[in-house]
Length: 266
Image (cartoon, rainbow, N blue to C red; front, side, top):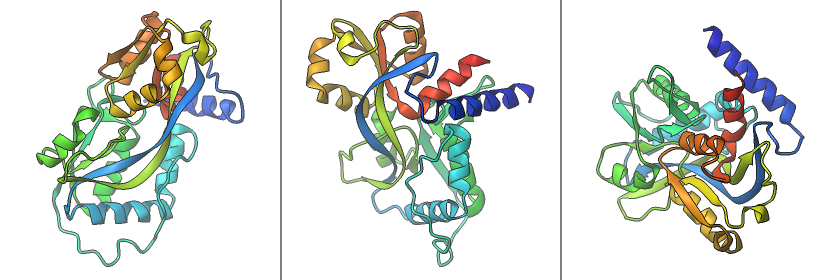
């Protein structure tokens, strides 16, 4: 328990210190933003699970629950949900198992702790959804690039997490956007690479998710100037590669940079 308390204390103090400052987090530095995006929920087309999930999220936004979770994990409110305290009242809810798919290596959204337990903002959000609806929750780590497949095959009921995706078939649909994010270029705090132009001839690390690919390739001058991009299976591996000097910069989610800096403080 002492470790958990010191962890969140360090994170919140760091987030407060960084408010209103530049984007140098100490251990890491955000040198540019390549794209902005909204994380959304994904469902099978026509699945009746969508209505109660989105309704309860609106109620949770209205009573401050989503905001509190956001501040706890990110140090600020990044929620995009429109609150409605009456959204759930007229819905008929029946017990069920609710299976969500998350990126298992994307702290602070979703990740495994030292004991192998899934934690993070998305996990706690889903736990509260199921608590209020009387559902049983199952959390399954998935590859963000396979969201459509996981949903349409029935392996999961909902994609929730650090994954923005484009529907590629008629069997899946995008639900409400629930938080904002940026795809940012990050270097080490002590790095000589302080501007995007400094990365000419260098390697950039990133995960396999389609949003990162789109962000990088859409910046034609940067994409043409770098030596290569290296894909890792998780954002945790991206940060490890950056610390080890395996790449000059990484392309990651803005919501995670301060969190990852805080982890390394302890």
